[in-house]
Image: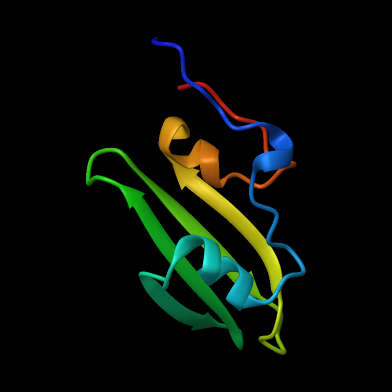
Length: 91
């Protein structure tokens, strides 16, 4: 596997507790939105069809701040979007 330059943990996104405007300033407008149990979930996709990263943001029930934030998909594509507490996994 080639050397991958991964961002420093401190440089990663930490959106928990922040308003949606902070997330959209960093990621742009979401690619999708849904409501589950009265909570809005916003999603962004990065990469291409076979190698992509899904970024999900779950808002608090009041809808004003990020309750949880996570990524799933290709480790190399997701690594710049990981929250600081998430380990970078090698695939």
